Every structure is written in structure tokens, then in C-alpha cells.
Image 1 (cartoon, rainbow, N blue to C red):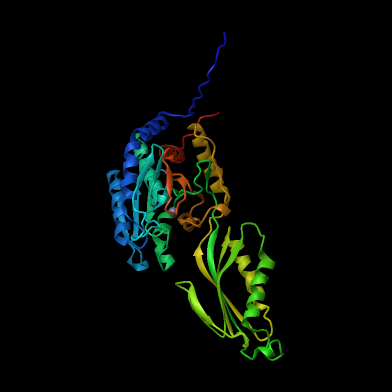
Image 2: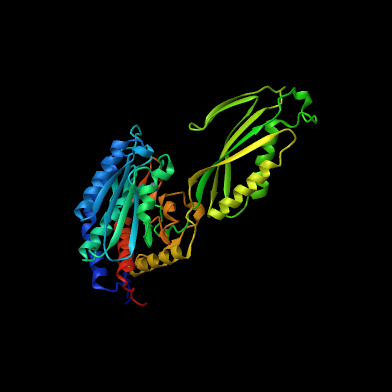
Length: 430
Ligand SMILES: [Zn+2]
């Protein structure tokens, strides 16, 4: 007689203490409420420019933090031309932790993509469902689980949900002042973006992104005289030399990219930077007098950014005869450089995940991680991870889809991490 042995795999959680088990139980018990809050938040349009909608989503989350006993306030966004931000604080004796979310989405009021739609038990589609209302909901239910386990009281935690992550307000320094202020004194910062969309990875480094503009002047003359000693090469040849010089000097450096995105050249050019469009006029029998190029620059560290800018300036300064180039750099999103602290924090998150039976978590390549709000606190906080929100795929598109199975699992991982960071409790030995 054949005996068929069916091995039923089950996950043995390595949870060290009663609070850890209580945290897990609370997340499971609360999951229907978490799903309901997600649906409610997604169904409010909060495209960055829909200030009333962003504020309305802020009100929904504010009520949650009020109920948890947090001190909440709305930072008015008028000074930086956006809706504003929600800040919720809970003072306590533990090391300070900053939790980062955002209320806005890329889907404006006139987008056809407006509603939460449950596809099946494990899938839902909706604007901002993973980027990042799902992450915001996870923040709330992490805190609820910590309260249920009786450990919220001692937490020193501040939550910032910005209203303009997808299109940062201007001036940027004002638009991120509340976030930077909240990060002061924080030992840890956790960002709940959807990140790589895969729960096996989280973000410990993000490249910064900034802009540059090249303006070139040449001497107008009849084309038949180009290259003559008193006329030179003209603005368009000089621009071509500079761009190719950038590529020769810098292409291939790890984590560095730079891309000229738009270019105009001729006798006269008219560039509208805000719209990123323009017009050019020129004739094939006239040496070009003007050229403009606008591009971006992505780097992993401030040092890499500074070095790349220096190289670009040097290339631009080696002017062809009778041309003159001006290269200017704009500030964009700073980078989240990979640090020891970030790596250690990820190691603890990975440990929490494995203890929950949810598998290991590795750092995603920074080349795959776009810019996000955590980068603004990199100068203040030593240990930062991001991309630990609700997982899914196709954010920023009308196919934005959440894997709802990751709602409780991501909540448990973050809650356990925060408990361990703030309780001084050691995870069980393995
Ligand atoms: Zn986002």
C-alpha cells in the first residue's frame, strides 16, 4: 500500500514576546477596517492640483490619528502653492520615529481613473491605491496594532503626510519645511511608498534628481563663412560638442545618468521652461546664433552630483571659437545615499519579516528607485528605509493595481519593526 505523505507547509513565526503576538493578531483582526479605509481614501480624488481633494483625504487620515490620541495639525500649503500637509505627533519616551506618507496622486480631477475597484479577493485597482494611499493606511493600522498590544503609549512618533509629493510645491524649501522640521531628532524614518512593488525588496537608497540648462551663443553670419577665424562654429555646433562631451566624459559611471530632454537652436529661440516647450527660427544659410538645451541629472550621492556638475562645467567651458556657453543647474530632489544606518535598519526589517514567516527583504537597486520624500530627511535622520507600503504594480498609470494580500503582511512587518526599534526588545535567537 502506498502511503502518500502530504507535507503541509506551515510558517512558524519566531515572535519573541506577548506584545509581538498581540501586534500580529490585531493586524489580522483589523484588516477589514484597513481595506474599508483604503477604499474610502482612494475614492476621493486627490490629484496634486485638486487642493480640496488633497485636504479631504488629509481630513480622513487626520480623524484616524485624532482617534489614536495624536496631536494633529494641517500645514497650510498656500505659501508654496499646494494644498498642504498633515502632521500627527505622539510624544513618548521611546526613540523618535518619523513615518512618511503622501495624500496626493498623479490623477487630477479630469482623469478618467477615479474609483476603487475590487477585482478579486487579492486584487484591487484604483488611483493612488499603492502610490500611496495603501501606505498611508498601513501607517494607521501599524499604530492601531501597537495600541492594541498596549505599546503605543511609550512611542515617540511623528507622521507626515505631504500633499504634494507627486508635484512638489514651489519654493521647494518651504514645501518641505514641515517634513524636515518633523525629522529633527528622529532616529529612524520609514517611508511607506510602494517602492519596487515587490515585498522581497525595500529601498535603502534613492538617486537624487536635478535639472540643468545649457544656453549657447554664437556669431550670426552667412553660412558660407562658418569656421572663419572671426566667425567661428556657431551655437549649434558648439551645443553638439558640449552634449557629446558630457556623454564622453560621464556616460557609464555607476548610478549616474544625465539626459538632454529638449533642445532648440537657430537664429532665435524662445523656450518656455514651465511648459518645457518652445519655438526656434533659423535658416540653413545663416550660422546659428542661439541654442538652448534642458535636461536632468540623477546621482546617488551629493558628492557624485558635485563631481558630475564640475565635469559638465569644464566641458562647457572648452568653447569652440566665437561661442559662449552658460550652464546652470537647478535643485531637484536630493538623493537618499546608502548609509550604514539604512542598511542596519533594513536588516532589522528583514529580521522582523523572517520572524513573521514572510520571507527575507533585500535592498532594491537605487537605479530602480525614483525620487521620493524620504530623501529630504536624509540630512537629518541616520537610519532610513522606504518602499515598505502596499505592494502592486503600474502606479502612475490607469492600471494601478494593489496586491491586497500585502496589506496585512506589510502592516505586520512595519509594526513589528517599530515595536523592536522602540522597546529595546531583542528578537528571538534563531
Ligand atoms: Zn508616491
